[in-house]
Amino acid sequence: MRRGAIAVAHLGLTLALLACAAGNPDPGRYRLAHSGAHWDQQGDDPVFASLRPSYPAYFDVILDPSRTEEPDLRPLRNDLEHRPVDRRNYDALNAVAIGYFELNYRAASNPGGSTYLADNFRAAKLLAIPWRAYSEIDDDALRDAIVMFFEDAGSGEKLGTAATAPRLAGVVASLEPKEPQAERRARLHRLAENLKAQLPPDVN
Image (cartoon, rainbow, N blue to C red; front, side, top):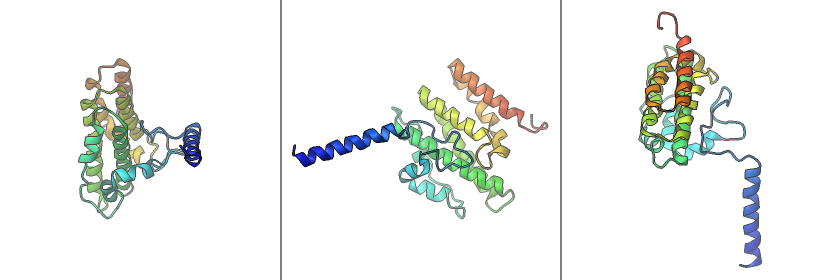
């Protein structure tokens, strides 16, 4: 190998090591927990910027308030249920989360508006993707990530979710029978009970 090529190789390795040392975000996880009121960035992790190239048509529809058509959710569903589990599963989960938080916020901030029903309906369809994947995939880490998404959606932290979090109670409760692991089942139960406690008295 020529001296210049060796120098380039060493430079590439050095940059890679520096990225790891600086806490380069791990994409194999749910990346939006505790990101504050917004969904585009988690600390130094540019979640949305890293995901958009993978699902451009989906994000073009979801992020345009003037568009109310149904996005094609098959790529998200297929990636989230992919076996063996790898980065694409987590990318799909995080893309679903971004779409849900965006549509939920738009519906919650404009009740009775012209796109209110469409945004609510599309948000519900997005919730169904990780709900279904939970039954299809028995990978512990991915199941933990899906539960983390539901916890985030029910926390009231993201814009618009405080008012809509109780709607998740039935969705989360329905996952309990699908979970054989006692610790994760207890986690689901606590979340479902917390969400149920936020429901108006006449709904409980």
